[in-house]
Image 1 (cartoon, rainbow, N blue to C red):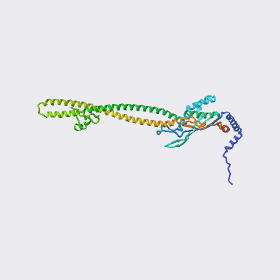
Image 2 (image 1 turned 120 degrees about the vertical axis):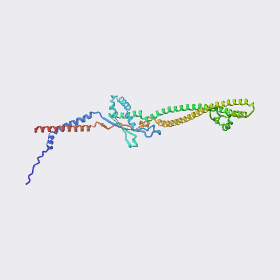
Image 3 (image 1 turned 30 degrees about the horizontal axis):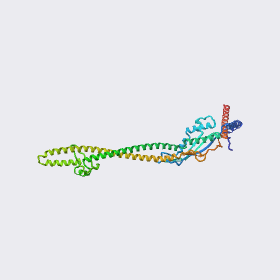
Length: 408
């Protein structure tokens, strides 16, 4: 017959359960006391309520091709909603409305929450939802509702037209730029008129000097037969294309010089003794004509250079006028677009909903009915559970210490 051995492994759980059961009221009573105390304490706390609202940014905004006037950005609007300027004005209205002590600013701003939603987030494009969710959690039903209403009202007053306000500032800047361009154009037109008058005068003077050398009706023959007349080191071609018409009966200096030189050669070739005096007279006359022609040529060259400079200035001012006119057209086109944006300025929409040109309220806050804090049952349950765990640990520890002393 097989020998059966009894299991000598000690049962650790049963003694402990027996120990705890014998002292169960040490667990139950503190748990009940703490739970009930926590429940009544929660009833003494000020009730906190939450109210929600929604605003939307405008998705139809006139912008120029260079995107100098961007559409309202939900992220920017969310930042402006939480700006210190808005919160300070809301706090001032709250204090005046409820005759309350001004709360700490840092604590006050934590009552407000802004939430934006991303519709698309890629490497190419990040698209935000135009709808922005707002919530306020504060003590008192009326106080909570008032804070939400004041928040949206102050924000719309301050920033409801923030893009449009920027456009209106740009309009003023563009008007100033347009006035500046108009002054530049007026100065260029005045300068052009002076240049034109001077150009006509200098051109006429040039024609008169050239007419002294050769009348207009005979210059083509002189250019063909006598392309240049020189005196010592002067080698200058007379430009005959700019002269004015003169009388056909007039004899030019070049023609006189040619006739004198021809007569001089005839007299030199003659063997008559009485021709010597005539040759001397003709030589002196030819030299005087050459000197006079050379002086006139020098004057003509200077006048030609002056006329060329005036023509260059005239061309340059015309080019600058074209540039300024193009710039003015661009400024005026841009101004028309900016005026279209600035014209969308508004403060009130139809009905009771506040709205600006860039932002509008989608849902008007109502009086909150659901209390969000304190959750009395949750507070009491949590406190009771904590008390139970603490008492349980204390009893187990006391039992362990008692057994340790017995075995010592």
